[in-house]
Image (cartoon, rainbow, N blue to C red; front, side, top):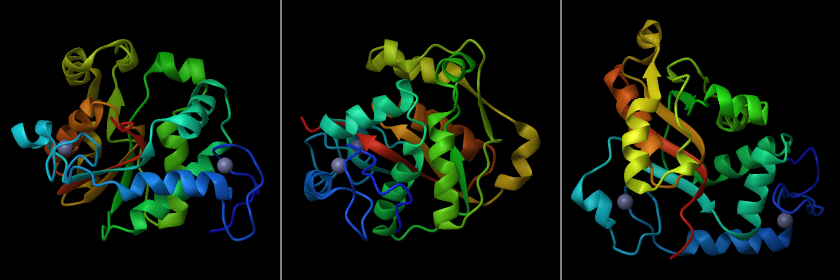
Length: 228
Ligand SMILES: [Zn+2]
Ligand SMILES: [Zn+2]
């Protein structure tokens, strides 16, 4: 994949010809893919093949894929993207997501980004998941629809809450747009988000999409749980 900016989306150092990441970040992120992950939620949570959480209760999605750890240079880059208005990183992030997705044999019919609340949108100026989903759509050549789900107006942001609170909060944060139901019937959805933390948002959004008639939901996030 070509990198139009010729700089690494993580550290901003020049990227070598033929790659879109600098060699240092390339080595760094390769470490992440080496360690085994839970076969369902894709996180590094110790117990294998299923982490304790998935073993107790299977999530509604078929599989979640997180490309890299929410740690170090990747975490800094994501924060700069979300809070430092480094909007242009979206394309590099999408390239990484596509690169990871390619290693799985998944053929989604449609991409659906996790929606952002009005307050976050006002703060950041954009929906981070949607901005990554736009170039991802072009790379994967599958349609994108931001119209299946909506975040409720007064939804509380997950980052301020602990694990248990996040589950309850996610349940009341999202709603569906029923008039879009037709477009989802029997479709395999790729739900895209920036980071998988507890998975509460991914689980709730997947549940809603399946309830609207989607056949399957796969979750793809740029970053996932940092190694414990
Ligand atoms: Zn780099
Ligand atoms: Zn799991």
